[in-house]
Image 1 (cartoon, rainbow, N blue to C red):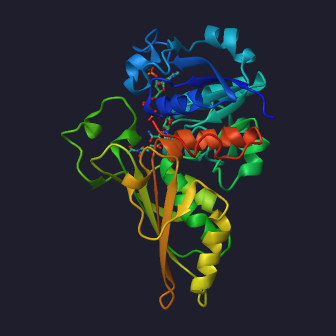
Image 2 (image 1 turned 180 degrees about the vertical axis):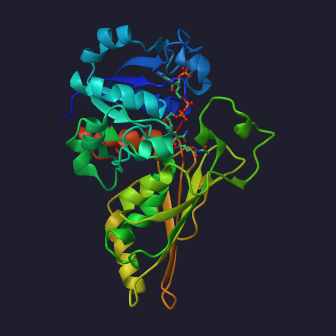
Length: 344
Ligand SMILES: NC(=O)C1=CN([C@@H]2O[C@H](COP(=O)(O)OP(=O)(O)OC[C@H]3O[C@@H](n4cnc5c(N)ncnc54)[C@H](OP(=O)(O)O)[C@@H]3O)[C@@H](O)[C@H]2O)C=CC1
Ligand SMILES: CC(=O)N[C@@H](CCC(=O)OP(=O)(O)O)C(=O)O
C-alpha cells in the first residue's frame, strides 16, 4: 500500500499549476502542504480559488511566496515537490530539493535536454546545474516507467513533445523508418500553451492561426533527443483555449507492411489506458479537459509514407496529468491511478 505523500506545488498561480492542484486535490495518496508562487507575486496571500474559480469550495488555500527562507523552513519536511515554474527557476532550484531528500517532478523544460549546450541556444540561459541535467530522467509516462520510478528528478515532457513522441516512438523504437530521412512534425496548440501572463502575441484580438518559432523552437531538440531521430518541428498557434494536435510524417523502410505498423502501435499502447488508438483522425475537442491522448494513423504502403496524428490537452496530458502519471509510477501505482474518472 502506497503511503500518503507530503506534496508542494511551486507555480500555483499559473495554468499548469492550477490543473495540477486540481488533480492532486482528488488524489488519496496526496497531502497537499504548500501552494507556492514567486517571491514578488501579485497573487501571494490570495486564496488559490480566488485566482482559479473552478476550485471554489474545493481548494480554498492561501498561496505562499517562494524564497530562500521558505525553502529553509519547509523543503526538508516534504516528500515531493512539483515545479510548474519558468525553466530557469527549475534549473536553479530543483537539485536543492533533491539534496533535501525530496522527489522532484519538474514540468518546465529545465531538465529535459541532455546536452547542456542546447540551453543557451534554445532556452536563452546557461544551465546552472549540468550534473543534475545528466542524472535527471525524462518522464514520458507510457515509455519510461522504470526511469521515473528510479530517479529523484523527473523531467516531465513538454506539451508538443508528448503528443509528437507518442506518435513517433512506436515507429522509431522499432526502427521501421528510413534512417536519416526527413521526419516532419506539425504541431498546433491553443493559447493556454503560452501560460497565463498577458502578452501581445496571446492577446485575444491578435491571435490568428499562424506558424511561429519555425526552425528554432526548443521542442525540436527535445523531440529529436527522445525519438533518437532528427525531426523538423513546425509549431502553430491557433485561436482556441485548450488542446494540441501533433501530426507527424515519416518515410518507412521498403517492405514494411500494414500489419507491422499496426503491431507496433498495438504493442505500444494496448495496455496503456490513457492512450486511445481511435478509428478516425483525432480531434482536440475529444481530449480537451481530459488526461487522454488520441492517436490515429494512415500508411500508404506503396509510397512507404506514414502519417500519425495525436491530440492531447496541452495542460493535462501535455503537463499536469502526465506529471501525476509520473507521481503514480513513483509510488508503484498504475500510471492512470485517480485519472480515469477525472473531470472538473
Ligand atoms: N502552458 C502549457 O501548455 C504548458 C506549460 N509547461 C511548462 O510549465 C511551466 C508553467 O507553465 P504555465 O503554467 O503555462 O505558466 P504560467 O505563466 O501560467 O505560470 C507560471 C507560474 O510560475 C510562477 N513563477 C514564476 N516565476 C517564479 C519564481 N521565480 N519562483 C516561483 N514561482 C515562479 C508564477 O507565479 P507568479 O506569476 O504568481 O509569480 C506562476 O505560478 C512552464 O515551465 C511551462 O513551460 C509545460 C507543458 C505545457
Ligand atoms: C502556444 C505556446 O506558446 N506554446 C508554448 C509551449 C508550451 C509548453 O509546453 O512549453 P514547455 O513544454 O516547453 O514547458 C511555446 O511554444 O513556447
